[in-house]
Amino acid sequence: MNDENLMLFQLKTSKKLDLIINEINYSWYHFQILSISVLILSIEGIHLPLMSTMIIPLTQYFMLTPSEVSILSGSIFIAVGLGSLSIGFLVKSFNRKLLLNISMFLTTFFHLLLSLTYNYTLFFISRFIIGYFLGIMIPITMNVVCEILPIKNRAFTLTSLWTGVGMGTFFTYIIMLSVMPNYEIIYMKTVFLILWIPLLITNTLVLAFFHDSPRNYIINNSVNKGLLIFQRMNRSSLTKQQTNILIKDLHADNENELELKKIIERISFKLLLGKKYKRSTILLLFLWFIIGNLTFGPLLILSITLRDLEYSETNSGIILTQIMIGLFALLANILGGTLAEIESIGRRITLLISFSFSLLSSLAIFIFPRSFIFSIILIAFFMNIGNNLMTTYTSEIYDTTIRDLSSGLFFFFIRLGGFISQFVFLWLATINPLLPYYLMAFLLMVVCVLILFLPIETCGEPLDQEFTNNSLIEKMCS
Image 1 (cartoon, rainbow, N blue to C red):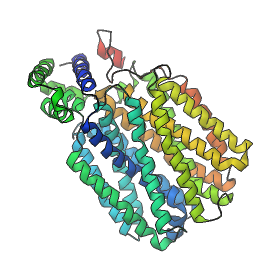
Image 2: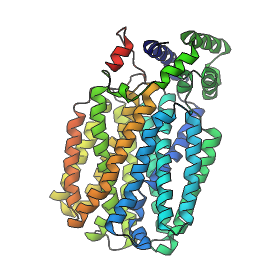
Image 3: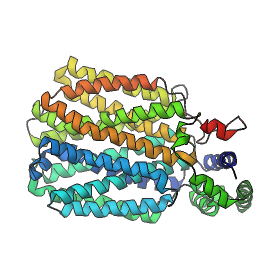
Image 4: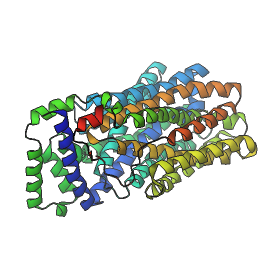
């Protein structure tokens, strides 16, 4: 089986699967997977902004210098990026379910170790390992969910899923406010131990109930496993006769299983820069890198800014302000997903709207300095729309055979941006508390310009696009 036959097989298979998934629509199985996915994403909400939420007590506890704070905070972004980048290679040897189970178990274990250690080196290593496995878990989770959803309300559902990150951060703030409202470092380990509980619960649910998508099973020639998931999604939607016909069709499309596996093993980053995807890939690489800076840089310095500019008189007041900002950011997912499903607006215009309003809100910081907190709330709200929809948009652009590869690459670039932001934004904040926000405004302007050039609109489109040219591989790679 040559490369062209592989693409034909994927296209013919995906068109059948789209019909089945759209017919099933949303079911109890979807609710089960979506609920667990929210919990998985909440782990990122606990760990990635950890230095932002606990920068003051952690600095005091380990007696860190500003450069050591940047290294400790930035290291997890490198770890997450490396984890994401390795996905495209790991899925060639291991299935998604196994990778997710291992990653979830080790993340839970090292969080417990993080909670018990008093040694800075062990704390650093545990945090780095957690970051690596987060980098594997998050893209896999989003791809699985993307592949089981019908076209209707797909963007709304995927965007709303990111409320899990906000919930994890919100939960962290609530525990801090309850246990150490004035950043009492003697209670820091208690906070970490309480935060271990949702990881333990999520680990159990993932092991028992989370499965790969039937689309990925079938395209990778595990037809029976894929059909079993379909039965779990909605038993009444596939009769025995339909199941037998589908199995016969799929096996007929792919008679030589060994050669198919060899073709899949040859999938590489080259496909992402092929004729079909080249422009989108280059633009998205820049966008994800810049968004990484915009997301995690300001998040790191927010509590410091609130303290240095005396927007809050007490430590508990700083925590309450961060909770308020986080709550408004959570609401953004509903609006963003709704706009993206309107055909006349779609994904790209929604992205442009969200980042344009973020830019205007960032400029308001300098025009109305007394309204700093209100401006930050608006920035968090609109940027949350754009950040989360960007993940949905990227997952929809690339075909199933390279979705893990593409997601891993882009998640690496957003983490790379996050890593650099930990040094740049903290350094600028030491010069002037408002200087990082000038950089934020400039980067938001660049993002808005880049979005204008995105070539593909995915609203209402199937996950695997049909090629009209007979030479499919030429369409992909030339």
